[in-house]
Image 1: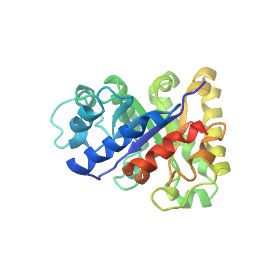
Image 2 (image 1 turned 180 degrees about the vertical axis):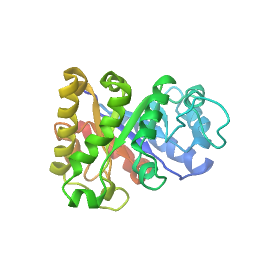
Image 3 (image 1 turned 60 degrees about the horizontal axis):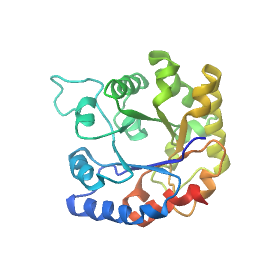
Image 4 (image 1 turned 30 degrees about the vertical axis):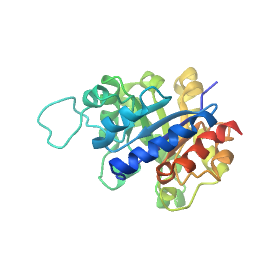
Length: 251
């Protein structure tokens, strides 16, 4: 049985005071969450603060990105071993904003995925299509290409200790959400593709949905057979809303 997983991606938001209030609010409601595993991914500079705030709780700590290099002369980069050293357990790789705003390729995403694993971090691998790609009917081709970049370079076994997040780019921060049926269709495609390579990995891997998930639509999304939780953006910045999403698998 795959345990539901809800991860908050805070993106480039927050300051020390607002982050303390946010984490305190989440902690206050943890007792109302029965099934879901919870993680939060603050901006790099606030990771140590959040680590201290969540210590001794069930909240896991993640980062939003990492370098494909482990150390060296890479000004401005943050390495996987550094993230592990400050207490991170998860790291997002290949988020659509990295791919489509920063121009990061499938190959670089695969290299970052490998770097995360070398550091003992669990990668949350993001895949998903642009609106134009959905309208062209090539969603599955795009998602398959993004998955295959990792599988071809790392092998299917590399996904045994990973999480996948399907995020239709046209639904991120736009207020538009894929219908549960649209999301399920792509999640089922991802799972079937992985099962074709390794049945156990395809069965066991958690596939999250990301794209304007809210407390009001999370339960309907998470009830789909192959949707195992969410990678949450804007709604993760409000404790009550984030907790409502975390409770959705209990309904």
